[in-house]
Structure formats: structure tokens, C-alpha cells
Image 1 (cartoon, helix red, strand yellow):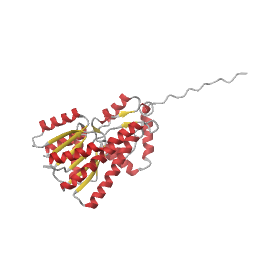
Image 2 (cartoon, rainbow, N blue to C red):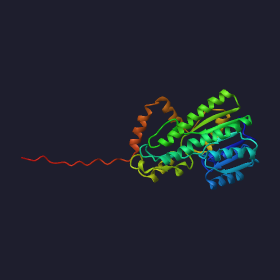
Image 3 (cartoon, rainbow, N blue to C red):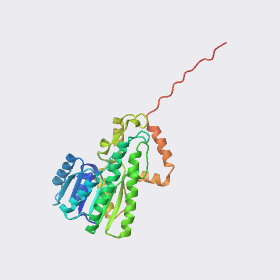
Image 4 (cartoon, rainbow, N blue to C red):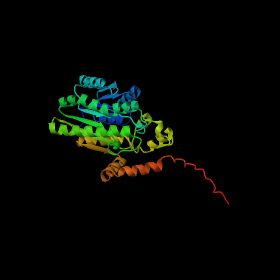
Length: 296
């Protein structure tokens, strides 16, 4: 797929961040859009931005949607085809973050992040894949993370979902290559991208005093690591689709961590532990009672 002009793209997580940036970039290239997000106000803001900044006469539809809802996703895919005539691309971009220890994480929080980050990708892929095949020229773009290549403490739920998206998408790409059906797939691994994911993430109290000082400081520190803007990320993703890449890394941090995991596939964990100890709150030194030896 060398050109997006006249194509139809469906994007989840389109209310902000990379989803919004992808929508704007595609609209500028004459691509028709079906946008979805749980945040209705953010979705409307994306729509206004496209209408005021894009001269291309493109058709845009919106849908308030919870990607973890399988039936809703299937219905949205059918609606996209009914309203646009076809769908050529699905960007399964919606995602959330969760900070917690494995021991302390609540099952409800795990179900929440798996439902969005993993099942949302599965639902989007399976709901749209038949329509992409019917178009004769389609592409599935699933957003994993650099933490789908490289794990970190306190983020087991996030790591698990992003590793799962990677494995799911790589297997899908191999199947599509074998089928030669006109559809391909790309897995995206962003590093720190300036989006709203930090503000919408959940941080469990069990990491306070262990890995972070406090929630407010942790959010501020995380945002300092977001070194790539969403517009640049969208540009890289679309270039990856044009080149039919299997994997797209975004940001120099993503390239560095990917290289580290390749060179030290097991030993990198010890380096992460060492770095985490240096950045974690200092634990108070236990006070021991001392008794002078009796003098004779």
C-alpha cells in the first residue's frame, strides 16, 4: 500500500495521542476515516481538528466505543463498511497503562488492562480482517510497545499485554504471507511518545515507597521520558505501512532498548534491577539497639 488516497482507515484510540495524529496525517493524504474512542469529547475534538486543518474532501465517521467489548467492535466494523463501502486499514491503537507489583495487583485491574490492550487488538483484528480481505488491499496495524520487547518491574500487566500483542501480530503476519490474500500486518513498538496515556494510567499504592516516591511525582517523571511527539510517531508508522514492515520501532529509546534486549536477552534484567534500585526511594536503615559491654 504505497498511497492512502481514497482508502478507508479505521482507528481506535482516536481521541488523543497517536490515534489523533494518525487521523490527521491520513486525512491530509486523502484517506477516509472511521474513528473510535471511549472518550466522546476527545473524539469530537479530533473531528474538529481534521475539519479545520485538512483541505482534502474526506468522509469521516465517529463511534464512541469500548474496544474490550467484542460485540460492539464487530458491530462497528460492519457499520464502517456500510458507511464507507469498504475498509482498507485498521489501526488497533487504543491502550492504557497499569503500575503494580505482581503480588499486589488486583484482578479487576488486570482484567481491565488485558481487556483493552490485548483483547481490544484481537477484537479489532478479527472484526475487520474479513472486510480487509474483501477490499483486496488491506493492512492491520497493531500497537504494542517497546515494553513488548523489554520488560520492567512494576508493569507486569502492561508488559504481558504488549508482549501478547507482539506475538499475536507476528503470527498473524506469517499467516497472511502464506495466504497471499492482499492483506498484511505490522506491529508497532513505540518508545516514550507524548500522549495522554500517563495521565489515564492506573498506579497502585503498592509501588509507592518501593519503586516510586509518590503517584504525582511518578507521573511527572514518566512524562519526562516521553521524547517523541505523536505527529512524528504517526509519520513513522505510515512510512512503515508503505514499506510493508513487519515491525516498526519509534524513538531512539525504542531502538536502544531493543538493541539491549537483543544483545543481552536475559542479562538485561539484572541491569534493569540495578537501575531501579538507584532510582527507587531510599529505604530507611533499620535501627538496632546497642548495649555497651559492662565494664569491670
